[in-house]
Image (cartoon, rainbow, N blue to C red; front, side, top):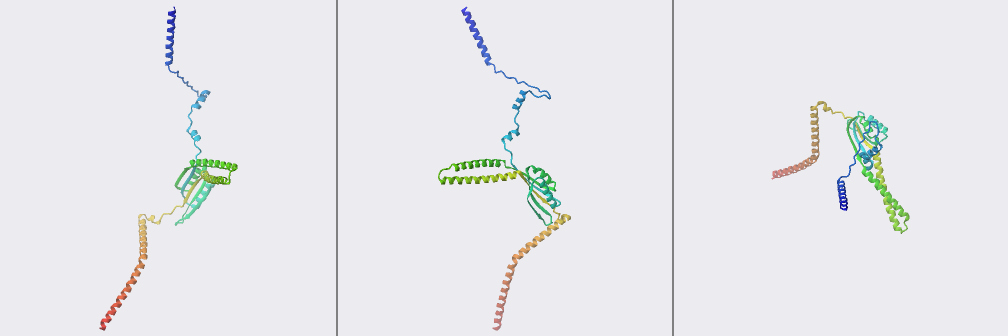
Length: 297
């Protein structure tokens, strides 16, 4: 009986060992995902809404807006517009700038040989009114040329802010040292010298920052207005008129060149003539003297 019980005990241990080995060889159970179909007009379950928020990818705009600072861009435009009446066009431009909240920073005008006026106006308008102002300026006359430019100064602006912050912190530390300084006078003078240098750098960086702020907030538009130049009279005759005009131009250039040559050569010709006349007089006198001496003999 004891042997039978031992055999049964050993057999049961063998069965349990096989069962454990088989269970250990099986992979971990895979969690099955449940799919939910939300009816039209219904909202998803609360737990699914939370999962959607977690699983939704972050948009590029939100990530870039958090990582990148606000862009600092200086806008500049150059326009060339042909207008029938220069003065009336200038009045229109000044009105457009005033309505946009800007001003005319510089202006110049001139008159050509055909008594046609032209000029350039430098305008400063708020950055938000840059495009609307351009649209209105294009309608002042016939747009001949346009050039737009945007200079991104974000990197320089951020660098200026960091430098300004560091300089101000250094200024504060120097002031603390100056207040707590109890050493000799030479040390105090060194601290004051360094403090003056730091404050000078702060003023220079702040000036650059103010300049960039003004350029960013107020865009620059350079508008060149000009009246159309009348066609030359030779164009009415076609190729014949142009040929005659070219011939007259060549003749005028030739006459001008000849005059320059004469002006340069004439003094030398006159000098040579005088020298030749003197030599001829001398030769004649000698011949007369020879003739007189031969006749007297």
